[in-house]
Length: 149
Image (cartoon, rainbow, N blue to C red; front, side, top):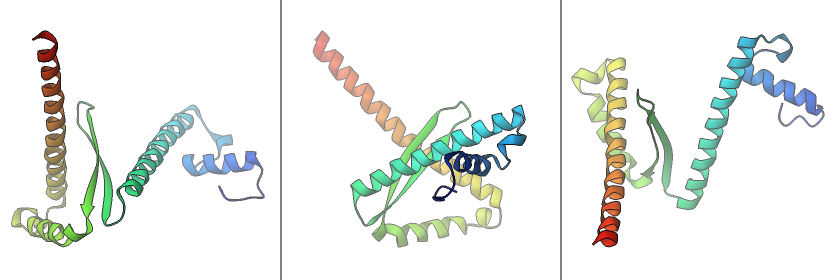
C-alpha cells in the first residue's frame, strides 16, 4: 500500500489504516478507534526503536550485532538498553546458552525457560542501571563536596 504510486492519498491512508486496524475505517465503532490508537502507538514505538537501533549500529560499525532490549517491571519502570554482541564472541555465548538451557530443570519446561530468561535479563540490565545510578549519586556527592567544602 505504501509504495502504490497510482493510489490517491485518501486510498493510501485507508489502506494503511486497514492494515493497522485489520478492519475498514468505514465500519469502525468507538472500540475499534481505541484499538486503532493503541495499535498505532505500539507501531510508532517499534519503528522509533528500530530507527534508534539502526543509528547505533551505523555508528558502531561492523563486527557486532545489536539488540535493543526493553524490560518493563510491574511498577511500570522500564529498563531500555542496546546490547552489543561481538561476532567473535557468538560461539562462546551460544555454547553457554545451550549448556544452561540443557540443564535438567530447564530442558523441557518452556514456561520455566521464559521465566529464567526474564529474571536473567532483569538481573543483568538492572545491575547496569544500579551502576549508572551509583555513578550519578557519586557525581552529585563530589559536586556537593566542592560547593560546600
